[in-house]
Length: 507
Length: 95
Image 1 (cartoon, chains in turn red, yellow):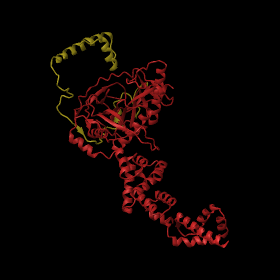
Image 2 (cartoon, helix red, strand yellow; image 1 turned 180 degrees about the vertical axis):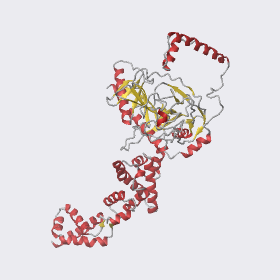
Image 3 (cartoon, helix red, strand yellow; image 1 turned 30 degrees about the horizontal axis):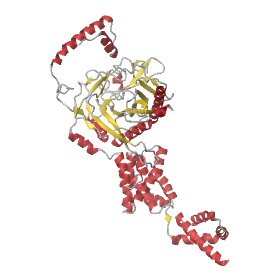
Image 4 (spheres, one colour; image 1 turned 60 degrees about the vertical axis):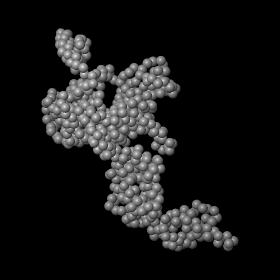
């Protein structure tokens, strides 16, 4: 297969839409989803005589991402005008950065060996970041299928973006997708973007070329646009790599061009050459002065950074005592990791020591199964869950103390969702789910059940061990309350064995 | 530096301007003259002088991240040559 002889070389350009109240150069709201042209301003509409003023939070967000990706920070950074004519950009130019991006020379670590469920040793690899710069978003144009007009909504015009450019360090579509997942996780941890690809908060273009394996020089690249989900990025790259490999195999050459991914057709097609004419005539924007980032500001932002996913994951393994897999799942979202730690803190207050690794694992188990299932089923974020971290800790404590069975715990959890004001203990109590672990209380009932069923006891002793379930059921039913099923089982075994011994003697 | 008619046509195309043949010729002459005038600056030795991005020696002019709704939809659309009540309308742009 042609594919096997060639190695893909991929670099990405990613636009991250920032979460700010106002736009980057004007005070109109930046929120997503408002009625068309209700969040606009003379500045974002490009009216003559208006003057853009930089939103300070955009600089802070840029520094947050830059520091989290090990970038150098430019001490002086300027804005430039990037000229092109398209109706989604009323000024006729986009305010961006050109030769002095605010952050440069960083990296993001990915683990290509990492599979969701595999425990294979993940090998870490660095993907270089050439630069991160600040710029403004354009408006949205809608092309009516009928008629001869295009509708324009300028709500998005001037919404702040960070553009990241990677080095051509990625070697497979899978790696590209891993990089994007990692970046998405990072911007969410940093609280600078919601990272939602489908809604356009994270937009990705890719430069891709192939070269015969072992060759150093890069092949001719194409640029892929219009991939609006992780899955599409992988599919589009797969397609384009196969297309280029096949062309080279036939002895054809690759044309450097911009291609649009057509998700419905599953193919790429060239953009019209006119749109591909890159002649942006960058020039420093005389409306905006330089940004000078001084060391104290960098230090302040560095101090305010949250613990980042990789570090947190390592801590969950090394200090908290979780398995690697659990640590990975729980740190995927910052809010879930916070919830876990808060629940664990409440649990430690109750247990006051003991096997803390086992306690952490118990909390992890109920989050990974019950909590995540409910979040998925109901489309909730963890902050919206009726069972907060303290009540979750109450439930885990009941289970650890063997006050409720594992089935009982599940039932209590379901009930807690509906009764947000009651403690786990009270719910378990009201529903008679507190296990009786007192052997003295259970033993007489076990004797009664065996005495009342002499035939079944004989059959059991004759070898039909399956009847044990029947006895357990009988005891559970007769007992007033919820005996610990494991205890019932062991008592039954003991007493049945005792009867076997007497039966042997009788014979 | 001399600006050719091809240069004029290219820049005009980028700016979506349409010139007649005479205008193209005149633009080429005038732009050449302007650039020739500015070429005087090349006589200065600027090696070791960092490029200047702004005439004012001021940095970090910023504002707080606060929303101010200065105009509403009606005011936004009012000066538009064509609008449909919600959107600005322009001649069809083909993707």
